[in-house]
Image (cartoon, rainbow, N blue to C red; front, side, top):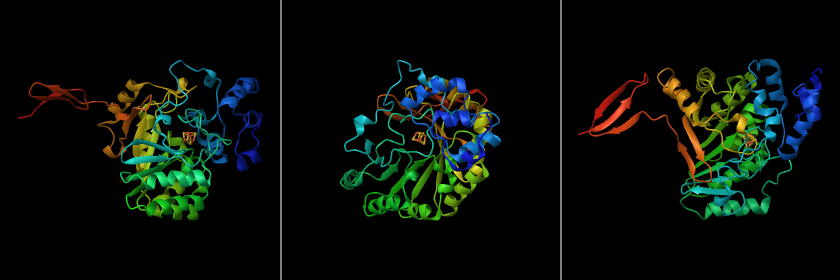
Length: 352
Ligand code: SF4
């Protein structure tokens, strides 16, 4: 069916009927996708639809957002809470896993719903965000924990909050002497760049430094509008980080990630983490395994600037935290280390 250009321009695609109208799924896929939609939210913004229509020659953007029947396959090792957030939730909206930082999840909605999301059980348009009382209690918890040096706004997508609410949170945190750093993890600059307004940027400048970690997985996501939105943030003095999930048939090739990381650096976003896919329900078709990630990182090392090298990390299922998972270039030897260079040759490094 022909694309409805009017819909494309103005409305976020949320239903299976709209997916069919947009030509994103075939009519005979509809019943399978209805089953997906009963469990997991769907949203594709006009900006992402435009990207899919105009520059997604490899399908690396569409596969991140367009639901597929594969999501109905739940493997035995997949979990509702794959990284064990619940065990570290002392009050609603707070995840306090590490001593010096807390996650504040004030909102559970997103501009888009990524098909591989590790919080897909919690997020969605009908998911309840913190009400005023709950937000007050969460901020109060942070205020009472002097060891908290950094607050990370995640979600849901924190940049879906109205700028005034974001400003209120930032102002409250800035008044806490022990909170020195604010960080936001967001998909908005890549999926709804028009939301990066002057008012929103002002809210992000209340607590200095506020770092913004932008979730991008494929170089084709970095359109002119996305790049301009990131430039507005960078020009305002907001340090930008990139976070990327390693995804099968989307970016699990060294050449794709090289293009992505180079472009991120060119637009002033420092690649920070490359995540091994979490075991969220219905996402096995996206997972590559750790070894694939190590191999790609090995291919990038030596060929690509160090600025373009994020850390490959795994969130250990069960809530045991996030750790780097290589590749490892050293091996203990009797008098020091055996060190492997970028060509695979091993060298002895003696320690006296
Ligand atoms: S924007 Fe983030 S929280 Fe929202 S669906 Fe995508 S990965 Fe999940």
